[in-house]
Every structure is written in structure tokens, then in C-alpha cells.
Amino acid sequence: MKKHELLKHAYDNYPKGTKFLNLGASERTLCESNGVFYADKFGVKDSETHYFIFGSGKWAEIVTEEPKRVPLLTSEDGVDLYEGDEYYRAEIFQGKWNLSDYTNNYIINDLKPSHAVVHSPEMSRAFSTKESALKWIDEQKPKEIVLFKDDEVSAVVTKHKVKFNPTNPDLLNKWDGFIVSANELEQIYKAYKELS
Image 1: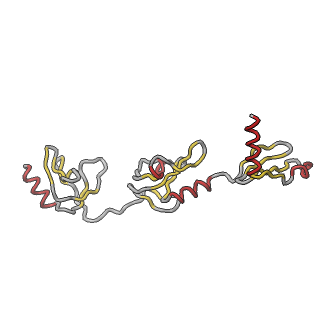
Image 2: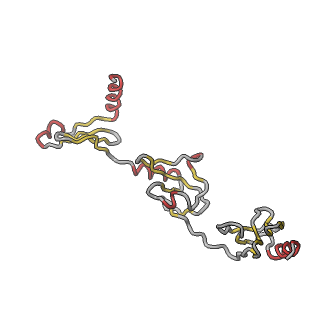
Image 3: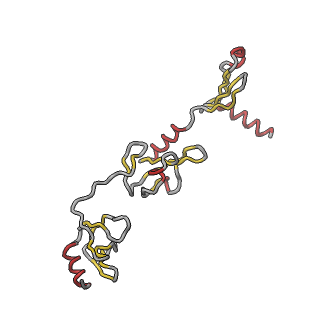
């Protein structure tokens, strides 16, 4: 076919608003015709998107109904996320979960199948809102940390205090219920820094 015949076929069969699958990409993209075309040595393209309507001897497939969108994943807060969606990402770094700050306001603008949240959930998790991401991250933090444990006592840190628990029943009265508050810990730390 000559150029003018190819263009006539494009105008006749791909009017404005016609949905078609792009021929030129390895992943066939669903496109919408703007109704204006041009021809070059490679084929016929939509003038707005520059997607191929004709190339390598074949015409782009016209799509008469929208293909069903399949979510790439369901976020930790229960929302289906699709390719191209915005999302928030929690990532594990040095053993701790943190909100990813690769972009402004912590939001990732374009979910793709190659993103870690899709294929490496042990390292990265997706959320539909920043608030749900922060809440989940907070829930992953340990509720208490054992500072030490020996024959006499164990020291356990919680969010607000350090509690010393006797490990030897003979020492129950000596250590039972001995608690250091967060304020007292701060004072101890300041005193330690002054002595250092």
C-alpha cells in the first residue's frame, strides 16, 4: 500500500476515540486515537501519542471493550493497587521498617511490576495512605527490648521505662518492681555524657 492509502485506511478505521493496542512496544499498550495520523518509513502513527497504528505489515488491533484491570498487588491496608497507581512504601533498612523518602511527601507516583513492593515483600511493603504506612511501621517496632539478662536480673526497655526483673528467686525482694522512668533515663544519660 502507498502512503496515501495507508493514511486513508487509518482515517477510515481509527477515528478519534478508537481504542487500539500499540504495535511498537514490547508491552502492548492500550491507546486511544486522536484521529490525526502521519506516515513515515516505519509505518502509520497517531500524531499525538506517536504510537504505531500500522507497522511491519500489520494494523493495530482495535479494542472494542476495556480489558479487565488486574491489580498488581493488594496493599497492606487492603486496597487493590494497579499499574500506574500512587502508593506509599515502607522499606526495611538495617533491620528497621521506615517510610521510603525517595520522592516528595513520601509518595511513589507510578506503581510498576518491577517495583520491590510487587516482588520482594520481605523488603518493601505498599500502602494506600501515608497514615496507614506509619501505623503499620509503628506496629512492627518491638514492644520491649531486653538490654541484658544475667544470673541476678534482667533489664527490659519499653517505650516509657526500664524495668529490672529478678532472674534469681532468692533476689526477689532486691529487684522486684525496680523501674526507671523515661525522664530518669534521660537524666542518667545526661549525667553519663557529662562524665564522658
